[in-house]
Amino acid sequence: MELKLLEAKSLFTSEASHIENILCSRSFSNFQASCCGGALVKASYSSMSRDTYLPVRAVGSVAQDKLATETYSIHINGLKPASSPYSCELRVLDAYDDEYGGALIDPDKLPTEANLFASMLRLSLSRWKIEGKKGIWLKLPSELSEFVPIAVKEGFQYHHAEKGYVMLTYWIPDGPCMLPANASHQVGVGGFVINDENEVLVVREKYCPSTCLDLWKLLTGFIHESEEIFAGAVREVKEETVIETEFMEVIAFRHVHNVAFQKSDLFFICMLKPLSTQIVVDDLEIEAAKWMPLEEFVKQPLIQGDSMFKKIIDICIARLGQRYCGLSAQQVISKFDGKQSSLYYNVVNSRDSNCQAS
Picture 1 (cartoon, rainbow, N blue to C red):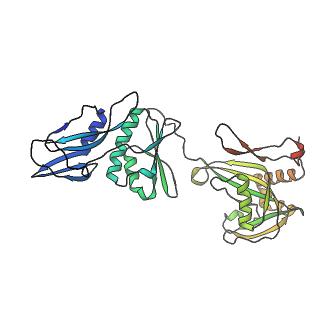
Picture 2: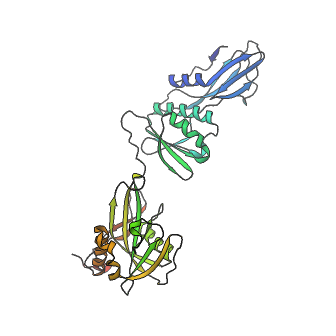
Picture 3: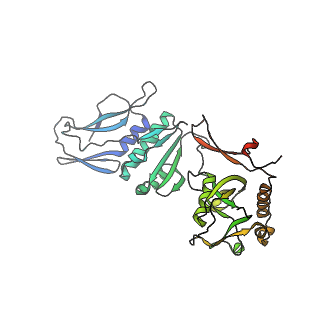
């Protein structure tokens, strides 16, 4: 059976070849079966000498440096189609342009059929290559997880995964990929909470390495997504002991590499002022909690024997003696991104500071 293009608009070579591969037909007695993207579609015909048209969505030729998706008709041996329910429509995936010359595929408008997704993805990549796109981002929700191997087969690479989705990327230009890598750090906080009696709020954790079994330690934890460092420290203290606190300063922070999942770790020590005193222990994570005299806390063998812990406590004590200034959080808005940020720095105005460090 002969296939002919009726309309005179040209198809790009690669896309025309792609459509030839996904649109197939085979004649039977008074019956036409065609396939699109692996999905079988039925359409009836007669053997009369008129033309039968099957509309196909394809990418048209360049006009004023812009590409348009247009409808082309492929006719098969005879009749003009009575209706279009049996037509095969192939189009580029819905996507948003990003500010770096790439595209973000809309996860809410993905097809739900695997073969159709594969065909549309191949056509889209062909289109985006011609348009000069760079990085392509594909977010696949959990319910479309069977699309992951299809995307990988087309050249997509894993970027990251979160609860509910996996993100994949495709770099089109020749040369090294310029897309940003997955997040490289996890961020933790520790709360140095000391009251007017010079007592430090400390805990013993239920689950910790054997070297820390007898250690009374500061309250620590990880900050949540879109959570400020100071807010995370206040939250962790409240969750584990119900003690209400007020953030004062970031006293110091530690940077270490190749920890969980080979990621780097940033750990911020925050000085917090207690606003309550009654402790209620979170028994899911904490074995015990109490107010411990600062001198007793410092004398613990593990504190004295660990250079990092000892240095952190020395800095906290220096801050209490007003011989050191920590970093206060100031809210600022940058015209660069228009977002409000927390900028941490030493307050130089003595009216805003309780320290007298030189």
